Image (cartoon, rainbow, N blue to C red):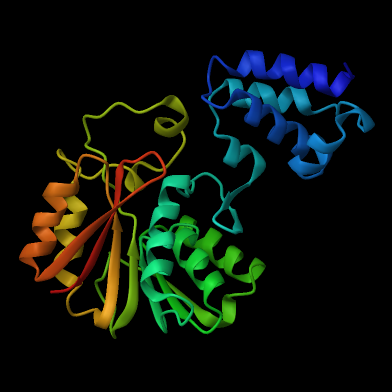
Length: 274
């Protein structure tokens, strides 16, 4: 066994104490230390020497620092997004919203997209990458998160098609949008989280009152005057929140459908005009 392969195996064994994906974490950290993509590392690990800073990266992960913050990026859908402290890390579960939008619009796509709580641009830029004529607006309360979004817009070649504004959900947003995306905080304040999340990611992007529903109560009543005829609003939900959030959407006059994530859990509510 080559030195790199052995060190990956050793690191994965150590990381199993703090991570659900220890082998993947080790590979990503090794590739980053080498300055290469993970795929290149896996194709021929024997061609590389173990870089001097690999152990330091592993130690950071052992201290529960998220891999995305260590690397400075997270891949989501088909794009790579710069992320760091102060920005919510994109999750694979959120790709459910993009898949639902693509099913709804097909190749024609939406003309105008609104992303409420855009963070580093996760949902907005993933959607815009699918439809080259679409224009977008991303709103977030955090100037730090918007800083990442601005950098990502430039890196992805989307800056001329997107507007980014600091705001309080839909307050001050005008016009109508064919596609509205939103991944709001939906964790109850009493819920315990893993140290990776609780100690590093922004609490304001995670917690939403005693029952985790506080932000839905503020967002949903504004959606009817923002959604264009024939459009769709797609909200991410916690997997136990389907009934509660659906009732809010129904009260606002929407027809509601639900999509499950790859694990079969309720993950996205699709709101259209009833």
